[in-house]
Length: 481
Image (tube, rainbow, N blue to C red):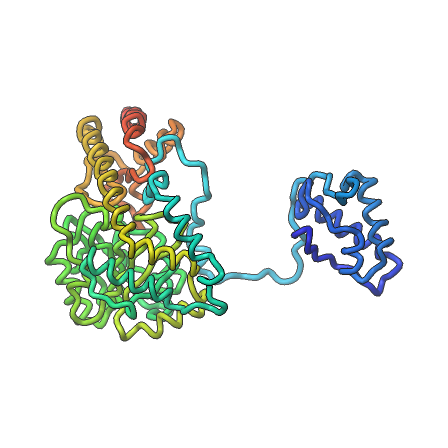
């Protein structure tokens, strides 16, 4: 409830109790916390005009609240909330029928609640916000917030034209993706891109193949759309194409940096996957979530770049290269699906935030994104090498690092022990101030080999050694029990 625009429900037909109605509405708002201590309530004349009652009626209600200690008056300043909210209970008693959601929602786990990060935070997928060029970004956004820069109507559902052109150039240069502005659709991150693709392509009961282990939010999204999601194992070459179900309508993969294990899909597997999709009239979603941070070696060609039959939808995001809070991503679609995906975006939320889109277009066009990526690539490579060296030297009896040369995380598998050891280590680490994810979190089924996933995006090099020292003590203690 906003004090200046309170929505009070007063029955004008019951004129004998008008002051009582206003008193009870305001009292409930104060005790429920909708009106907070120190907030100013409207002047009696203003509220009386709004409710079509006499000013004296409102004054009586205010006087009762003041007598209770819930309001206090200040000379020439007005009346202010004085009371504290009581402990909140249910807003109202449950009445009528119990509304029921689709059954699929009861099968999906709740997202992890927000918690304060651990002092030594190895969480996955969090970039280093301390190194983001906030002043430059603030200047670009401020320029777009001027009245002359904002259209009076609703922008195009596909995205700001300048941003679509900038993205097409960026992925063409950085990743070899052949795309024009018309092929690009701007989204609220990769997750919305997956949602739009699923809405356009999937009927209830359709089969979707995902990597095992893989990215849980993608798996959950396809399940929520009513798809039958089939986990397909990965090995040292990436997704096992031979294990794909023949009836799969959609295949979701992370070929440049398999999430979470870290390997890249081999050229032979890439060719096999594209052949498989062509023969079975299936669609491949290529999630290229953090390949900008590749450390050495020849850049890997994308599936989209290899595709000659228009079956690959390329999905990208600026969450890792910039900040997750910006919620900006994109997809590159073949012409055969562009109209439907644009409609899906339109009926979903019409368009993404225009000032941020325009600012990002300038950020790319002025070379600032490329400069930021180069800076962060060097920093993340340093952290990656530091963790890998420490794991190899100090954790060799318990953990085997898995090959990885890109991104913001690396994984390590336990040499012996099962899920119980993994869970014990994670819990001990939490108590020791170390945040680390179990590898089993990314499996749909029982993992063949439990382990740990260590993100280094948000942990400076200066804190890595102490974090790993504490983690090593936790692993040693758990393995010794």
